[in-house]
Amino acid sequence: MNGYNDKEVLFHGRFHIAINLLGIITLGLIAALCIVQSMSQPAAPITKEVVPSITRITAVGDSITEGTVDKADAYPAQLQNLLGDTYEVSNYGLSKVTLQSTGDKPYTSEQLYQQSLASDPAIVLIMLGTNDSKQKNWNAARYKEELETFVDTYKNLPTRPKVYLLTAPVAHVYENMKNDDVDAVVVEHEVVPIIKEVAAAKNIPYIDIFEVTKDHKNLFGDGVHPNAEGYGIIAKKVYEAIKETP
Image (tube, rainbow, N blue to C red; front, side):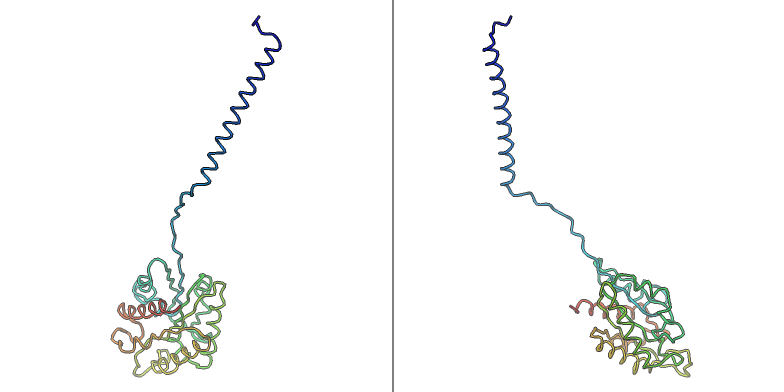
């Protein structure tokens, strides 16, 4: 026998229940107070590593874009070095190609052309026309018409890139010029002016590569393709144009 009657047992039971409830309420109040205090204090700043966005540049052209000896010397590679890591310059140049579909090697018939269209560019650099100047290829009206269409194709890509037209660089005048030779006179007096006309008609910028190379014929060993220093001049001009254009 524990010495308690029924009333005392009932009292002690209720007392313990009350004590337990009081403890639970006290713990709840403490927890609520902690939550209120934590909400009233400013949250600690969350630091995230900032990853710079990459601007993709697609360089389209012939062997003057591709590079004839070492692609590391070609203007797209030197342009990459000038622009730095926040840009990605891809070289889609291909030797001997023409802009005109009737030329001896149309760029638009090459797989590289399709790859350039799928490159998701923010900027497109187009320099085509040197091989079009050959006697067997040249047709001024067709060149202009197809250059306009070519520009529109890139302008209307899903990424809506900014398109630049680059004039052809200077070329030497050949003595006893053959049908398969680049015609320096056509380059200067027809190809370059047409490129400027199309740029104006399409409301896009052009970069005058002819102008910056015309006094540097010594940097064009074969009369058409620049050496590393000549490519450096082209890359610098393109770099300045990209940085100056809003």
